[in-house]
Image (tube, rainbow, N blue to C red; front, top):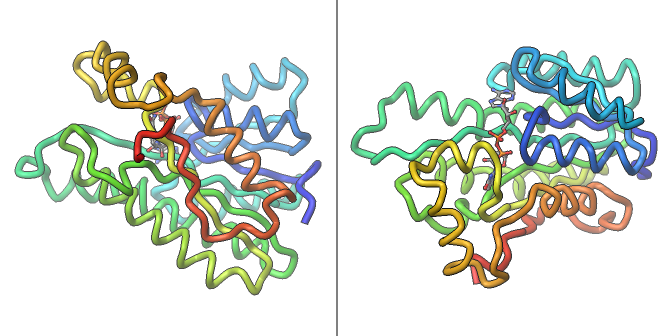
Length: 247
Ligand SMILES: NC(=O)c1ccc[n+]([C@@H]2O[C@H](COP(=O)([O-])OP(=O)(O)OC[C@H]3O[C@@H](n4cnc5c(N)ncnc54)[C@H](O)[C@@H]3O)[C@@H](O)[C@H]2O)c1
């Protein structure tokens, strides 16, 4: 199950953690596709291509199973999909007594449904030849966020179980399914949901044993490992990358 030169699709790859994953997989030789909303991935793909990497962008909305299926089919026209990274996610802070049914459904449509149908689309393509799927969970799937984010935490807990259950079902087909669970990583998402960005730095000093926020490259390295031949006996695993936050 070699990954070199094979196709990789990274959802939510236009920025943040997804962008770092796309770059990392391209540097190891994968033909990488960034799937993101509208044209947001195009500029990122252009920047990475200018650096000599094989990265292309496609419009993708993970809320739509059809969109995921089309994205996988587009990758397969160029290179067999060997690595699927279900990374797109959204999050916001809101007390649970204020969350509307629509807001709840919108979040789950990206964070949970999008991962489920991403796995399904990839598994249909990988059936018969095997492959790797890596989902982006979160430490929020293990312990409640320090701010009110119950729907988000719930979605990430569900991604943990989805990863484990899908791994068991797909193992006989040679498809490994794992997840990364980042702690607090310095990205647009993290900064956008906090009123006071200074909270991040104080949190790093006080709560993270390794004394710093996560970098997007820390998460990309874990995804690289999980989708490499070195992890060929690893499936159903949720790799926590959090500087010791959960300890
Ligand atoms: N930043 C953190 O501290 C942190 C911690 C744990 C887990 N995570 C998870 O990591 C993942 C990436 O987070 P990030 O911090 O890089 O976020 P980000 O907001 O910087 O990037 C998310 C990307 O997903 C895309 N996206 C959103 N909805 C989409 C949809 N419907 N279809 C396709 N693409 C969509 C966005 O356009 C964006 O490019 C998310 O799943 C997030 O929950 C982040």
